[in-house]
Amino acid sequence: MGTADIPTSFGFPAFVRIFFPGFVGSIVYSYAFMPIIAGQKWISLTIVDRILFWVISGIIMGLIVILFDVQIYQFLEGIQFWPKKMWLCKYRSAEKAFKNLNLEWESKISDRKNERNKEKIGELSNDISSLLSRIREYPQDPDMRVSSGRYPQEATRFGNVLAEYETYSERQYGMHMRVFWSHLWLLLPKDLQDDLDLKGALADFPVYLSFIFLSYAFIGSLGFLLQYGPLFAASCFVGALLISVVFYHEAISSHKVYGQYIKAAFDLYRIDLAKKFDLECSLIPSDEEIAVWRDYWHFLLDYKKPDSKRPR
Image (cartoon, rainbow, N blue to C red):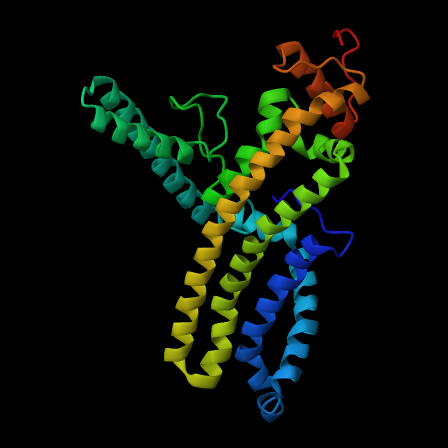
């Protein structure tokens, strides 16, 4: 699920989240359905009239999209709305792909240890770095099922990228992101809040467009089927799917960047948060410190009081 909240002010980040995706969606959907709905009236509209229509309907569509932000994210992550058998099949595929990735990484490391040619060592090092970058898209695995210490948690690559940075604070510090992110946010300097808000909007933007074009492949193609017949509709379907895939991969890249900033915020500002809670905090937390954060996590989320015998 995305970490960005529904905006409460209409600055540039809200413009990126709401207007841009809605405006693009309004344009493409208008050509699929407005000739059917409005007929000659739509065809006779001037470009100025059409832009005005796209702006107004784009704002409405953008607001509808952001209203269903959680559902859109969870669908693309593979958390909701997937038939059980489809999800299981996709997860097994992701699991197999990751295991092959991990095996290739191990093999390259072994080859580099035995290699004596400097040029070949350099090539292997580049391959290892590239493979490790892909492996680090996945969340940490407490069960250590493979040597890299990571493993797929979700069925989709996008879902695992989000799970990696959304579980980071819990794995490292015992701080559940759902609980402590809002507390941490209130301690961030205003300029940093604005910067993170913009980065979150830029990460949301390709997510929303990927979903808009995915829905358009199925819904918009029906409009073209009624207007121009099956061949044009099929072309629309394929084209919209391809555009959706392009934005999906861009969403992965954007969230990998955004996730680094979320993780950095916990690394740097959790110490300030600990002071607010009157807790001891060190750069590399001890097991006792992690346990205390977990106590407060359950206290704040589930109303369970911490063990009074545990040292603070």
